[in-house]
Image 1: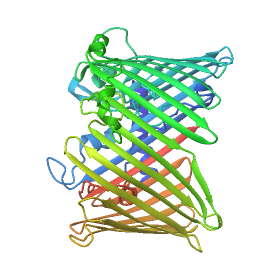
Image 2: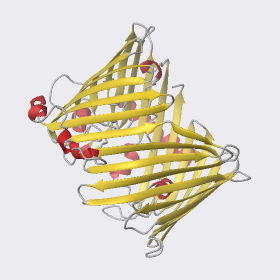
Image 3: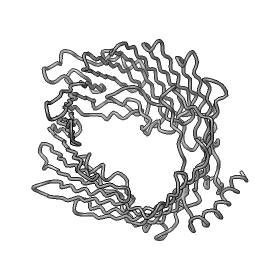
Image 4: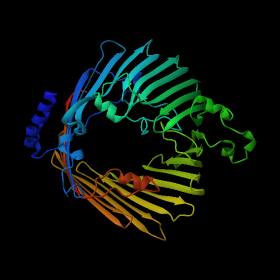
Length: 510
């Protein structure tokens, strides 16, 4: 790997010339295209990202350049794809930035981080993808994310096969066979897949049949994990549309251990004898998940715009197992979501009324969320809203956004426990362009009257291929403005005095 070391050494000369100080690295991820089931690539790219971060609380002494955030983890990624002939695509991505100091390796190592071989034939009615740590774990479910790339269990650890078959747009079949390896195993072999050794297993079989607005689906999945244990899942779903009104129903049953355990109860775990009007979930067992939603209930309101409603119900038993997805366990919820939009003016509203029971807390509460957005003259927009929940004091928020070609400002205020505790949160974000390439950014954040944060940043962006940022403050801003306006409960950011310099340089046409 002498050439890798040479690149990193060259970086030590190049970066001070460009920035005077070192900077940090990351990669541009190539995402699979939904169209055609693959990525049509005939190019290459190299992305260098570098970062140095100094924090007051670092060890063994303040403002230390900790190894995990140090410039020695600067990252250079290479990626490229070829399409030798129609239907075949090959993509590979390798990157540095991995060290093995515990193995006596103190230099950056190049590993294969991601890749796939895709082949589609019979006019794309058969699509086969051999994948290596790509975002390949997803299904077409609308209400319950029973399979998700964002699940910690399968995120970025899988290698295997994703096979999709379709017949006339009516029948579709999906099969995934994968092995999930520990991070240490990946690094030990340079990221190259090996055909020996152990790992967790995840299998999925998904079939759907649909025509003219109707769809019936079936899902079987199996998880075999050393840390989490073995589990199986059976899922069914139904979709129907009539005169613009849609109905979506999704159901799943899980069980620990092998497939034989699913037969201990009824096939789906439903006991109709427990049915009670208005309490459908009484029929379901603790290892069931269920969701139903009606869409398309739209109406034109004469002179005041259009109104849309989405009533639904969700249930997840306390014993429901979903390591490969995002379905939480132990709740029952009935809700009505809706929206309104004015026909002539930039004015809209969204709201959600729900009745939710938490099994673990033993509480049943009615709640409401609503917000209104108004577009004003001169690029100014105003959003205001309320969070209400039975037994709690209301939370109110107000957000003002003003954006032009030179400046951008967002000021958001929220009052929690209105009428009692009156905890005020306030967030002010401002961007100002200083010429063609420079932007000054400032953030002030007060969290529930008790904790305050600040951040000041200067960005240099001479083009879309080059970015340099320097930040100084007591926290790293992320999604605070979204949390204030969208979440009933929101936590304070991790606070620490810190200084960071970050850069990204992109080459190639991919």
